[in-house]
Length: 98
Image (cartoon, rainbow, N blue to C red; front, top):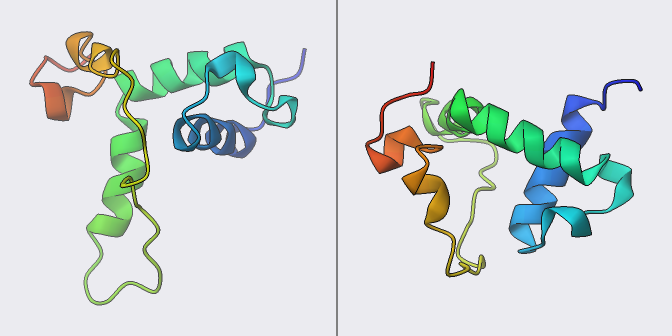
């Protein structure tokens, strides 16, 4: 089976998170839901999302666009579980995954 394009996967991950969906409820146009979940977990452990979000935050001067807004996200009661697993070490204080 051919590898699903990373750009489609990132779009799928953002779609799932933005709309508070379960992984299996993601549209098939983003690829298999298991692929979305597995890459989210893998990329979170190696700080991919931290680097993606740090890019726009680290620019000097006035940005052309800034589109990071989490005020509309709903938190599920289990939302803290990734912190306990150390998937977001910068936030949780857990040691970085090697």
